[in-house]
Length: 355
Image 1 (cartoon, rainbow, N blue to C red):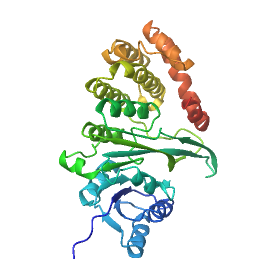
Image 2 (image 1 turned 180 degrees about the vertical axis):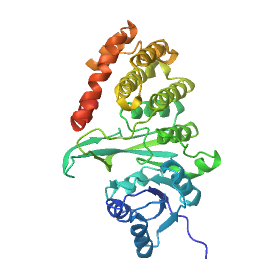
Image 3 (image 1 turned 60 degrees about the vertical axis):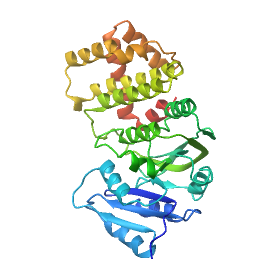
Image 4 (image 1 turned 90 degrees about the vertical axis):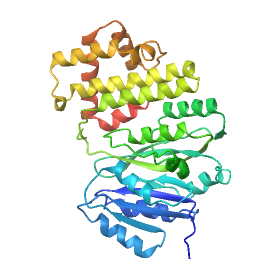
């Protein structure tokens, strides 16, 4: 007897997540909407994650486990899950996050019986201190609605990007047929593979819905200092992200409304780039940092967006003014100050960053 197609295929890449994995899996299996399959892709974990997964495979027939023989990264692991999926929609979960019980039911209810190409929802950023205690929460909600005209879809996508909700893969249902028809998969990138996947799916979507719930719990854990992995390609990939969104808006004829939003986003990436250049891990000499600033100030994308956008944030306004007037040292000092703030107060830095 042929197995019936589930409505949702939830793909969860796992790598050394034994401390949080059970909560994550159970939040999927305990959904009030039960017509789903959970595909757990173990990315060659060296801890007890695989055994945790096997336990749930034995307990619930909706759970499948794919065991990889070598570590290939979260994006590539998601691709293995997509290949194995059979659902009408694709959903993704990170192995250290959870979802509220009614989340998928709300998303499916907004799908117009499966006719909507992409459904998006909000998230709750939950911040933990070094002791594992929750110190703050920040719910981010999209505006509820359905959009079926190309310019409207692009405009809403721009709003989602402004509110930091576009680039994640875990706050959406994607029509699996679209991913298969156009061979859309996650790139092997160190950053933003979620965004690049989503923008490709949007290019081929004729409808978009948003559900006004923050039911995805995005857990952010800090150990009290800056110990995050240094990513050399950070700014290059950040610039590409802005450029991809710029081109998307240009093709959908909404560039005029996009310039201010994309300009502010690009300024944030530039400031973050300056902060990372100030990190000793970058191994950038002072002369190299100055050359970097000169290149950014002359960059065509900067001149088309960030150089002319309206800015309210004082730090970004100072950065814009310094770049436009080629005040290189002011830019470097600003980056150094942000680096020190993040190094010694990561939780406070996260709060300030959201303003």
